[in-house]
Length: 404
Image 1 (cartoon, rainbow, N blue to C red):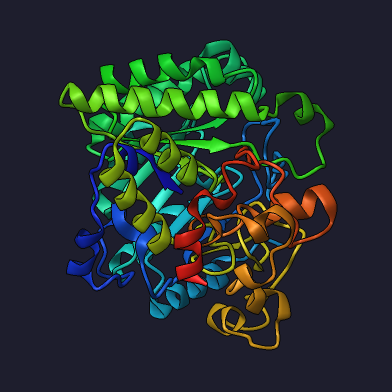
Image 2 (cartoon, rainbow, N blue to C red; image 1 turned 45 degrees about the vertical axis):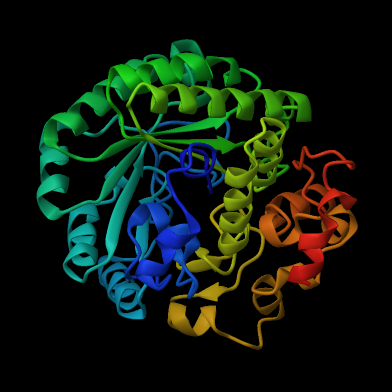
């Protein structure tokens, strides 16, 4: 994640992190990405069942649950183990997590054990009763997907009327007192809606929004035409930064993030340098260094409905183990797992543009899943990097040398 509001609007300073010793369990949620111990945030795709058919679904969700989903006892034991292990956040996802028969019991267990629980939902099933129950349990946050304006959201979600239902879910969540945020996957169809989405954010006083870069796993040919070009990506990030700054100048300060393209961080740094904000830009560079870039297999992990463990929720072709066979903690620290051990030190193994990039220690090579999907080479450059050869070259060689 790249915190646009943190970096571009200067809401976080490197010194802020020292108060919490950069420990996962002590950091507030908005600083969690800077933890030093990197206890992983867990994205748990707890069910394959979903009531929509989204064209960009990384989990290949289906209308019904998978036959091999963890039963209640297995799911409860998993949550107990994850909280004992000290994961700072469990993201309950799917499919659609509100279709899971034991969602409330499992969220309640996580919260009672001192772990932040967050929910990722399409919103269609979020009734007033459900929202109130989640609030009473102590859910930290609910992220509701809103992939553009009406026709664009409905197109992405595969159902007419999904947009209006998502707006209703936002209102219900707010009425219940839940912290609610928006999740938007940027595509060629919807990225021009970003300005209007910011209007909605302001009008509804929504405190958080995440703009996801599309991850193409190569399985959906209809996604090829939806991928943004490098130029379009730059325009999208420029607009996100511009609109975030405008809101902050007006006294409204939502948390704004981009997800799944670590090039956004160096791009903001270069943008701020061009704007003459040199001291602020150096703070950004230090925060990016502390963050360390992409954290698949290190600061984030994913568990599927059948107990399979992945480096992240998008990279489902590389299985690290199964919680049905051994505890997650043992899988996560298994020194015999070559891929996992290399991911924890991935900067040593990156090749091509990533290896010579001046921002290697600030970006971390982007999303390894995307490189794997595109070329079959885990360590190849992330094809979604939109920085130019000039931008990644010698101009910053001095601070790279200090890191190496």
